[in-house]
Amino acid sequence: MLLKSEVRTLVQGQEAEKQNLLSQSLVNLNSILMKLVALVAVLLLCVESIILFVGVISRYVFHSPIFWSDEAATLIFIWLTMFGAVLALDRNEHMRLTAIVSKLSDSKKALFETYSMLIVLLFLSCILVPSYEHVIEQMFITSPALEIPDGYRTLAIFTGVVLMMVSAMARLSKIANARQLLLCLLFITAVGSLFWWLTPVWQAMGNYNLLVFFVLLIGFSVLGAVPIAFSFGIGTLSYILSVTDSPLMIVVGRLDEGVSHAVLLAIPLFVFLGALLQISGMAKNMINFMASLLGHVRGGLQFVLLGAMFLVSGISGSKVADMAAVAPALFPEMKKRGENPEELAALLSSTGAMTETIPPSLVLITIGAVCGVSISALFIGGVLPAVVCTLAIAFMCWLRARKTDTSAIQKQSAKVIGKTFLIALPALLLPFLIRACVVEGVATATEVATIGIFYIIVVGFIAHLFQRQIEFKRIYGMLVEAVSLSGAILLIIGMATAMAWALTQSGFAATLIELMTNIPGGKIGFLLVSIVMFILLGSLLEGIPAIVLFGPLLFPAAHALGINDVHYSMVVILAMGLGLFAPPLGVGFYAACAISKVSPDGVFNKVWGYLLVLLLMLFVIAFVPWISTVFL
Image (tube, rainbow, N blue to C red; front, side):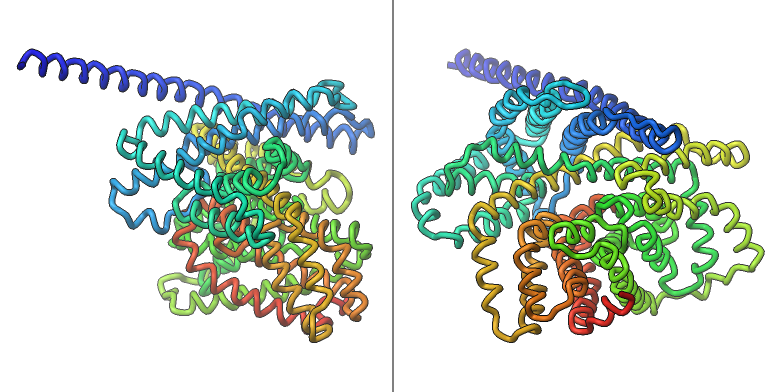
């Protein structure tokens, strides 16, 4: 009897040892793959920057455009995006909300982490075959300049899905025990079976089923600490499987569309730009000057952030890219000076919500193009509303800082201010250089970051000869970090695009427009409902998709009610900005937290004060048309 027990124990021990070896082998394989992915991604980021910069020089200086540069940049960009998303998953840097999970015991935290990774694996498994089919389908399309099949570009999505699956399984093997794994699998299977069994009910509910899939299901996933991008993905996937007859390849196609917009190229490039500002020491020089000028004032460094966002806003055409250009350059030094990182993230999010009307803005251009409004009039009319909102946020910053003890901070002498100004001048000129290049047509909004990158490289190396402030050892690590951050942000945008498609196909858009055309209260009622509607649309559809879908239908109605087109445009843009940066659904809020490198949990409560001020300013701008039209 004892012999049987010993044999059983020995067999169990051997099985456990085999499982441990298998787990360790998977972890080792993943480690090797991630090092390779990081190296390739950094090289792609550098090559991307060089191609776009050379394209600008060739076109503007030598008047000889490189016709294949845009295609090459787009091809590299999607690979860069997917590799960044892979690294973000491996490094646990995808944005997630952990407010509830963080308060649980360690064992329950591990249970939710297991659940989270299983949801990620479930989503990736569902789109694995469709992503391969998407590659095959795109192989029949040939790019006009490079003359290569488009499938080589979309192969990045399939490759990214496979690598993320490996990374998720490696992470599960490290954190999950058999009991936790079994419990989570049973729960996910039970919920999935229930949703499948209730398919006739969902279909009979009409558009009310959107509340189930895009509010309850996504909300539960977000609160359960599932990464935001995958929460959007699983909600969209569940809706398509339960309510529609559409193939799952639709999700992959919309993901491809969402991360393939040329303007999004600015995101990794501006993150790269911000990393170089830190490494070169130019960010520190700029902060030193701003601090010498405003450091003794209550809320002075917050005013610096506001001014920086005002200067760079609209340059890239992407609000996320604008934040990525400012935050990595300013935040490290501001944190060293005692600023609360979560407060900074809340301020960054609110500035992102209010500066979309500053020209040149892609949203302004889009409204002009699809709604028949003069783009030059929009550029003129957009400045004062942004100024009004900026002053309101500045007042809020002053209120929050009014109890700050500044007695220990002395006002700097004119000599010190002048010296720090001369040292910081190259960095201070950068926003003006970037804006001038866009306005004068030297570079597009996508290309302009590369000018900043090479400007910093040249100026930084010259300054290094005198100050020795470039930290060469940090370069590779910061580049990997830049790629990971970009991938996390862009995957959220791609998944949000897929979700936006599902909402549009549901008929939700047509129902909403019908309601808008029968609103009581005339002009005031129409403006109030427009504000509410575009705040919601900003949360769900983001700015440009909402404008393209609803702008051509709602602008004629506004015009018929006597509302000036430029005035209505400002109301719409600011409302969408509020929605985009309002938690818990606003993609921009999570992007601001990702760029700030803080958890959304601590930012959640701090951002509402700023958003309330912006909402009040939105009502002022809505009911005082003069603010938008005085300079027309």
